[in-house]
Image (cartoon, rainbow, N blue to C red; front, side, top):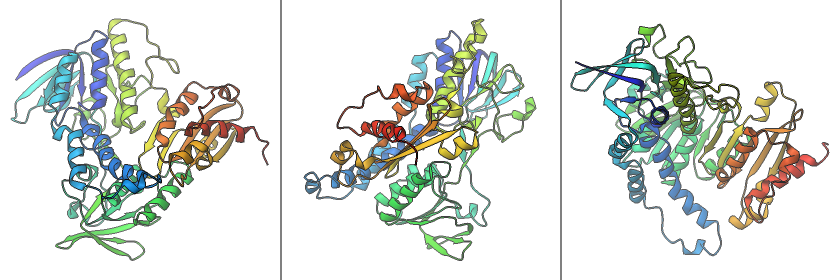
Length: 474
């Protein structure tokens, strides 16, 4: 057994943990990351990067086919082995050598093994060979262990060895048929990806598609999936799953029976906190960690958390954002510097509450930030929302024939600032940062009129939304 002391110990070497440790080191502290799997985490190897690598080729092919003149040049079909090989390159073939090299260059130590909190400011790491290392933190321990796919308690489902997002994004073969349980982002994106490979896909969702977003977003994605040949069963319960030699048979509450090669569970996430020693400090194993906006776990002066484990916003970019706030404030507190913890201050993750951007890489894409119309009204705002069809904009029609899309702008009528914006359509993710800046900056509507969009680009949607807002309400 060896013992080592650092200013900061970070449990979890994903993108959140990396950023947190890096900011603390830049602030003059020493830091170590404890990681039991691959440095770089879920996003690098099983989520953001491989999923988008799987989605892009079919999206690009279909986009070309919608541009007369270019469409005639497309004579082949999707090369699936090449798609999978490209995906493998983005995951570095599931090797973290490059990420470990980055840690070294950033001055961050790495201890491989399973870390558990065994006392205040103490983490015991058990390596795969059983050797243990006790790490002591002079100032802070931060939990950044992320989340894992939740498998619902459906009769026979666990015994049917379902896929989760990990198996879906890392598969080396494409099944002929696939049932997807869930209606969220993972379900919608994987349905899009595998439909592009020619897989017969069935989506079974207990409610609608992309719940929590503007209703027209889920409706547009469901319509597009059906057009691609996907069977979309909404407001449908799954009651049983059975694996046999012919595949997995899924039974629904309305009496349907569907058999496919594989079943993918995409029904939510659980925090990876069940076995990290939370009970040793009076917290509940397996639970989410409740933090203040400086990412300090409530009730502690040394324990921080960032990323999915906080349940604030389960998105890679928000985890990195939280990590920057946490790493900076840990360094500031450790070195006696002034802490800027007011709203939108240097050391807080204010955007988690009302300015979270998100892109769903389906066809059409869904890009949103801030509050939906329904969420804004529920929060007590006086709201006016305006919609516009993106396909009516010159830049959109030039981009591809038959462009279909919709935009919505949610306005706080009292302050005359934006509360939320949603875009649905091809490549609308490129419109999102402008909306995010407008919301975070609380840019007044009358000032937005002076942000002139270049013509002819899809950014002209901003002018059209403002024009619609300027019209008297009916």
